[in-house]
Length: 345
Image (cartoon, rainbow, N blue to C red; front, side, top):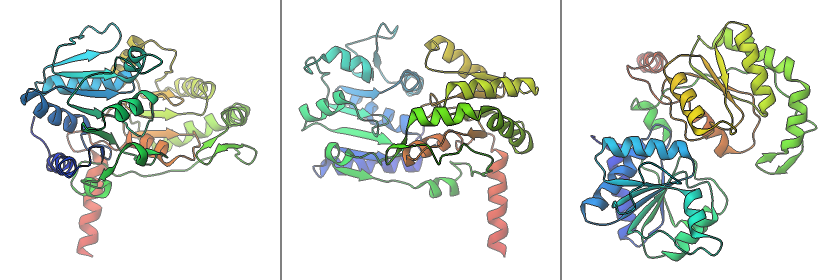
């Protein structure tokens, strides 16, 4: 698999950071950067040198994406996840579920994985077991990957921030698609309390949303029918009740939609992911399940009626929309045309 120039640059910058003694760099990789492929290339080098590398992911969907990419890249890997069919503990590269690692290590952090290099996907999500691994292996390279390196306390775990390319540069190079925004009616936030500077009270938000679900759902359907261009869509709602109400409204208006949540089995989720990406239905609706880790380039529209104060959460959501879909999608063609006209003017 041929690496893109910004992926090669990222690997070189990480290598230089580690050589300079910064064993804990974060690679800030915007949406559509190709961070799993970049991780695979670094781990392939580790493998070729006869060393052992681990890739830590915090959700099953990210584990499955890594399996797909690493297989394409020819890595010799096993999967460290409960009862996984690809369990191969002696393979030089291991794709690991963070939850499984935490369970294996136990309360006192024993039985930590042994490696020469590790990569932590979505490193803005902080876990005690990752902190323990970083603290224990303080002289081994452990590289964080994230599009949103904004979480409080990351600087205590990692010691360098590498930005090989910005979202604007990715857009100009054709690796991101531009976004148009349309606003509509929204939930009344005047009586919704904040738990902290980044989070609304879930109870208040749920109460305000469910009370106004009919009005909100009706507005969303009208806006989607006017502006959605019949596109593959992901919808985010503050509550599962609103998500289900949206799905009912979409279907009643002849727009095929499905709800998904954390109570679905992994097999059920995978079936819905694949059916949605294949265009078998238009709208995949959830509360927060698809915030990160859902890689579906066919998605061209997001319905976001889940108010958030967190920059990380917002950027992660919008990122579900910005991946290009070859052949070159219509939105990016429009962006190039507009840019060309402005250059002439």
